[in-house]
Amino acid sequence: MLGQFKVRFTMLSWLLILATHNLTPAAPFCALGTASIALINPLFAPQEPGQTEPKNAGTEQQQAQQTPLSTPKKVDSDPQAVALFEKLILAQATEKDLPAVVGFGVNLDIRLFDPSGGNEFALQLFFLSEPIESVRMVIDDSNSGTRIEKGFDADGFWLRDADDQLLALDSHEFEQDRAAIDESMVLCNDFLLLFDLKRLQRKASELALVRADDHTLISGKLKRGREQWGFELFIPKDAQLPTRLSLQPPMPKPAKVAVEAPAGVGQDGKGGSPQGDLGDKAGLPKGDQLETEKSAKQIPIPALPRLHYAFGDWVAYEGRLLPAWIEEFQGEDLQRPLRLMEILDFRWREPQRLQTRR
Image (cartoon, rainbow, N blue to C red; front, side, top):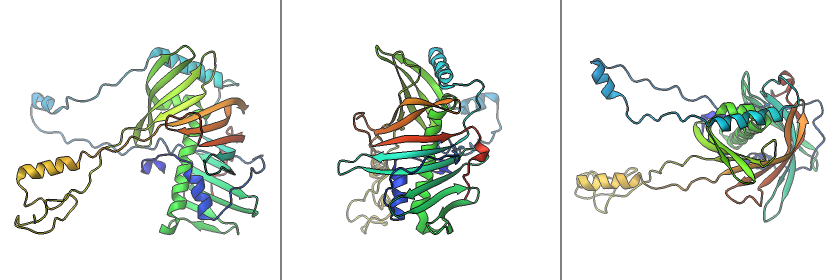
């Protein structure tokens, strides 16, 4: 689902959920108990099928001349980085022969940090990555005693309101709800990278190793949605597990903006109002037309800030060590987190029991 558009994860998803239904952020609710959450992998959605060029008749020499000369070469991973990654994977496991994490249920206490005032609420997430990506979110408002559920399954987006009425979120008025559900699936896929480091290794490429006096970095490329992101795993000296995952968005493409033609130039070259995205260039000299189009394609877009997940106090859940809390940062300020997510309960061993359907 998420792979259908470019994603930038923020905690806006939960705020949208609350705002859409006028909910007051709730205090932490009871532990998940036997219920659990299932996750899918929306961040790593299937790509569009590649277009194949038709074969042209001609000699082998002609076909060779048609072969692009700028095809990038695959960069091999540093064997030392691969070896260290394997050690991290072994350190995360407290049991042998563990299956991959394909879904989970988690109970989160979320604290938002804002200069104008903090906020705290509780959220349950149920997520499955197979056989089809599906997610269920549960928000309890302890102040009003209401309970709202939202999610996505094989039948589409859905919502169950405080009166236990089930609604399909297909119409335009539920656009914000659908966006909130999509972004929650982005969060789930980011969680999967931490809950199963072997998944991160499998999704990564071009691994490199950087050693410093007090830490080691594993860096590389990571397929996230339809884009290649950079990532770094920060491992303190003498530590068995990482304490931070940083994600670097790709550089945005330059924007194409409307450029007006000189005043008084029209379709006939004798006058009139400019029209169209780039203005009416029919009356411009050819050189001016080219310059106008060139300048319209070179408007730079500021780079998006990096995302950082800091984590610690690794706790064993059903054979895996997982972070007990996760702090989210944006940009280069690693002193003031945007939010803190405390994991109160976690289930993953029996994904078939994770209830993600409406």
